[in-house]
Amino acid sequence: MIHEAGDRPEPTHGSLDHRGGRRLRPLLLLIGTGLALVLLGAVLGVVGSFLNGTVPHLLGVGVPVGVVLAVVGNGLAGLLGTRGTGSRLGGALPGIGWFTVVLLFGSLRPEGDLIVTGNGHGVAFIILGGVAACLGLLPRRRKTAR
Image (cartoon, rainbow, N blue to C red; front, side):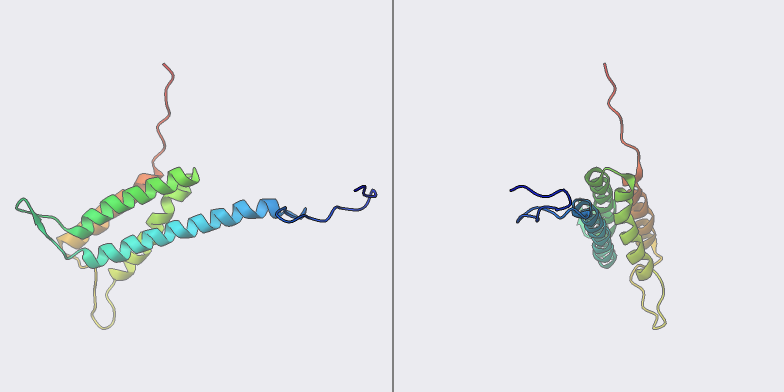
């Protein structure tokens, strides 16, 4: 079909319009990925906070489940965010979600309720989980040519 100079062809099924639709998809994908990473960190914070008091004994040594989950989960989520998005901001997003939840659960409510306590397990949970959340912020090692 031949079009006149000022006519634009109608978009076909499956194609995008000429008003910037091609630029909107990556932006929506980036926003969705960011929200998913923050949500992942928040879920790790909730589960770790409630499991922080659970201390099973493995080979005679008490292992706080919350601390292990915070270190392993935050470290992997940060690295996943950095690798998946290609930026350090993506690695920081799970840590932002985790810190938000943990700070809320570690603050004393008017009723006196407290989920993350100030004992050794709670302090280890906050400090080690925070350090592990920063793993996604480390710069990537560059491969050297030999």
